[in-house]
Length: 187
Image (cartoon, rainbow, N blue to C red; front, side, top):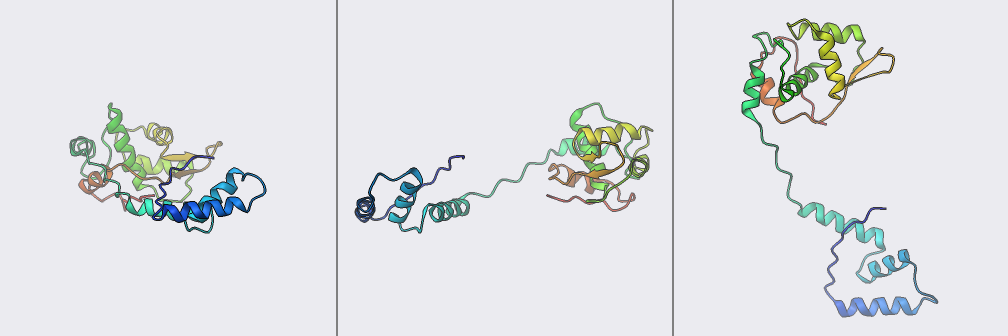
């Protein structure tokens, strides 16, 4: 079991000590670990340890700052946008992994979410979305980058729902929308 750091504030230490002493006095033998946690929690005014833990964790979540929004690398967005033509098709396979990744995310965003595709269907889509004539490279890369999953026999392909990088939205906004709807789903 993982340890959770809980900060317990006791406004009346004297009352807390008195409650602990009274509860310990009622026991015939020393308490187990769980019994001791419950005893201390009751002395602090909670029903039991689970109640104490739930209340304190909720307080911690409420006081935590909201996570910062990931910064967007607009230079990367610009370089990636130059890899697409006026119809939004990928012109060439980039050599830099960061650009490959972002181009694959664009293709991922064009795939329907939660829809199974055959190998023929995904290949036809990829053929329409690029001009350099290697849809198999794109299909393998989508699987390798864990953006698409396929069954072991290769009969079914599905987009893996996940949170895209911060650069995807600005890149999609720069590309023409002539290839059908382009969606980004945060999961």
